[in-house]
Image (cartoon, rainbow, N blue to C red; front, side, top):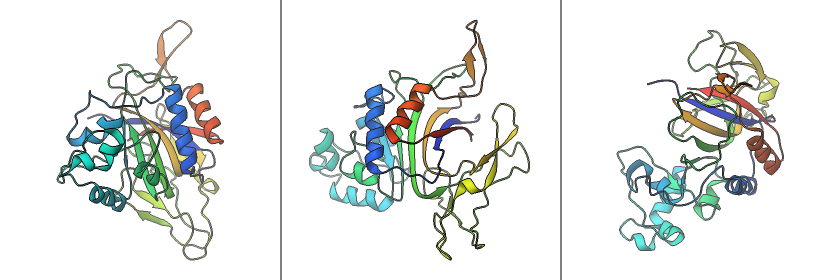
Length: 289
């Protein structure tokens, strides 16, 4: 099936989780710069897995109780009076309870339940690929296929994915997730939609805040498989991810216009847009998995 690739931007201070106002401002900046395209997507199916994306080009997942409350307030039997038909003028499709959770349409600018979701303990927002969107990378894939997708991940506790998902380097040093008092702060959240391992932000035993950047972690370079020490590794409460599926953006034009192997990099304009809007700097990471 191939290895999936996404390019990940994580705050250099990986304890940061932006406020709902900051996320709304970031989305507005992406719209203005055309990194995301807003509006109905007639090219996507209006039912099934892509139903929620077809309405606005974006969808989100958050606390199931919030979604259940929304569905209860907008009965499927009367789509003309549903929440989403009032916002977008489109009746809401019923989800297949036996299939994967397709999420809910994300309103742009964020309003109603979309705005509420930005302050939930965990939320994932995903934009469908669009051929007219401004490309956010310096590097390209050898055989570009489907358009890239962009997502935002927010979490109250730390998300702590493995830095060597395929165990290509053996005994890679991972983040232990243990408080200075000895308490193990790790737990699993297998019900959510990105990396399942979490680390509690505050120790329940002594009240001390956990700081990932105080702990050295080894990250595997995707091209060379070399180990690189990075304080905190991929641990974060907020991430921007650019998804390429099985197509890997590991090429860049040299002085002669030839494509040569290159470490994947986001464009300076994309990073500057994010940093100027949010007011903090990012590190870039490759994510193979």
